[in-house]
Image (cartoon, rainbow, N blue to C red):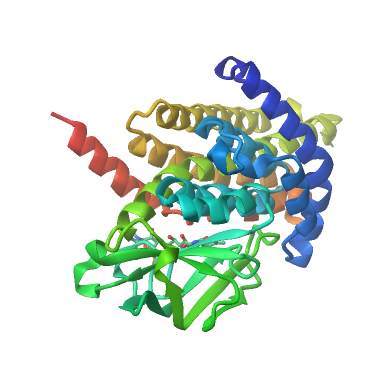
Length: 382
Ligand SMILES: Cc1cc2nc3c(=O)[nH]c(=O)nc-3n(C[C@H](O)[C@H](O)[C@H](O)COP(=O)(O)OP(=O)(O)OC[C@H]3O[C@@H](n4cnc5c(N)ncnc54)[C@H](O)[C@@H]3O)c2cc1C
């Protein structure tokens, strides 16, 4: 299974994370989905394994590592529990990574070691009730006053939002300037005027925390600003470009899990005195799922490898995200079909079907990815 794409170190990492996820996360996945709660047990187990430090500066408690390694970890976590994988990837690529990339030494020393150890939970607050795709039209405002920013507004759909200790939020210093007037601020739990509300009854990834955030004249010290004034858009864009590869990896894990259960069920389920795996229609479904999983894996690793090599990767990351998320939706839909009536009852296949659905929506919808892909291709073409 694509082992030629991985070196010894990556193979070892994959097999360690797979064994961990199968033992620790998979048995709890159904229960988390049913009860809709964030699992501190999973969080602590991941922390114990040291996975939160991947990709972060070793001087600040990180363990270094590559975008490809990070994607491998997300893929294996998602294969066992999609909810846990999104809580994890938000911590690593949307909260810790931008601090590592844009933070000054003091900010890194303050937050990175505790994010890398899992002691702090991080979140990323960009989407607002009035819109996510057109993010620069945000309504949240930050007004500079006596060494503080006075933050007003709200965010919604924020993963880890109600359990997070810190949240990187974006606000406008001057709404007439659109993307040129944004600032990135690190909010800390307990700041006066900062409150959260958990959002329940999601279709899928129900074991992940999703919340609305409210800012009522929150005084955020200037020392909590990442990069400079008016550079919030750069922080946002660079962060999302990289994180997109991990969403592709999450979708890949769900697609692979859908294929795994389908292969097993097709060999066990009997019709006409033989396994349904003998039916050509079922074989064609399995073949299509297999092709999509392989193509998704190649696209996801390719985007990560380009990033690791310091080469342009934005188009490839968007392609991987759009294709892999749509393949996860396809594969989980086929998994339900292969399971017949049992696929419609609570169980792994229907959970993958519900979990997969969000991957074409968050961190840039499939439509928005296509806009990015086409723009990049037109720019590159002679
Ligand atoms: C479970 C969950 C977790 C999330 N976690 C986070 C998080 O941690 N942090 C965060 O900031 N956000 C998060 N989000 C928000 C998510 O990123 C947004 O929902 C997403 O970006 C889409 O924004 P929207 O919902 O406002 O849809 P809209 O932007 O209103 O889009 C509505 C429709 O219009 C289409 N559309 C919009 N623009 C274009 C265009 N230019 N061309 C063609 N079609 C277009 C969209 O594709 C979509 O089909 C999360 C969402 C969910 C559901």
